[in-house]
Image (tube, rainbow, N blue to C red; front, side, top):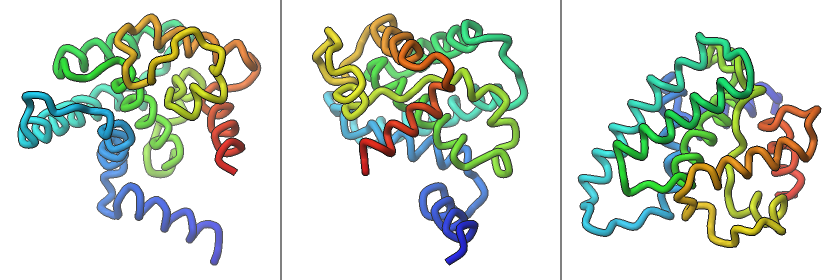
Length: 188
């Protein structure tokens, strides 16, 4: 099977064949963290409504990255922080650990889907944050002082320290690319 056909098949299987790659990637990123959500008093219908509301909001906000060029890492970090707090305000049940996973995996998926399908995705990718999850925490941040699960990060500054530490590991590399290379090596 040709490489291009393999890639096309993977895109269709993971992000749909309806051409709504951006939205489908957002929903796929939601699935990456939703097992960590506790229902509490929220019904399944309420949760589904919130998921769709935030997914639509994320698509609008993250699409700004496709047309606007950030001047530097600080500008992108500020965008990410504001977006995270907006999501937290809209769905108070989510921790910053869950929010970062949703945002960061969405951007990683968009980057994987590629410039041909999501025009402008490579405009700011050198500033993207890495997704923090159990595997990355255990392998990269094993000596980190915060021993609680990534999904329980409730303080944005704690989350952001992971980003700063990761950037220091190999400053000449683009973080999201470097993280992907590490993740693949870990999973082999």
